[in-house]
Image (cartoon, rainbow, N blue to C red; front, side, top):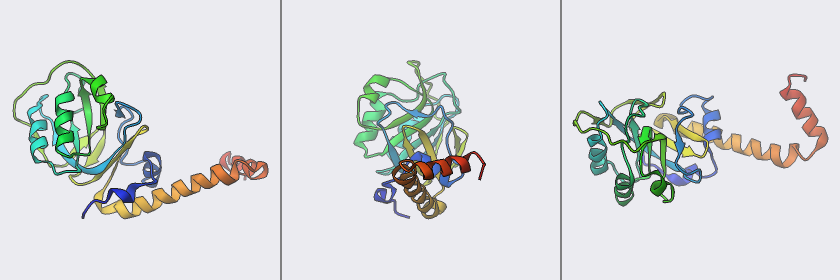
Length: 206
């Protein structure tokens, strides 16, 4: 199925997470290096083995344009698996962004740029090279199961993963949630009576 980024306009990680009842939401530690960063695209998965970084370069060669590199690094904070050079190459290759359950370095340079990177942490320590990592297999990244091609959506609040076979349903429900929230903001909250009724229901009183 061809990915159309325009279909994802008007949604957020919040509405997408709600549309999946909180499932497929990455651990809260995964955040953008700059809060203005957003990322949307099909996952190109990377499984790190024994702090190997060579597999990241393999993905840079093979991943298609528009893909989001999803690096399953076991949540380790022992080493940084990418920095400014990898990000510069990823941008040149036409990738959409990087999400890693691990650390990065050169964080100031990355944060000041326009290429979205979401990570668990930051460290200057370099990784190892052992050529044991693998790409394009099912991985668990930040407590979330991800298949190659699943849709990654990240913003200031975090990252959600939408199974590719449920995209239409999740998008429909997320957009409905966004519309309902706008109605609450524009109609319910300004109206004192409506607001009181809303709060009463939220408290379980009605």
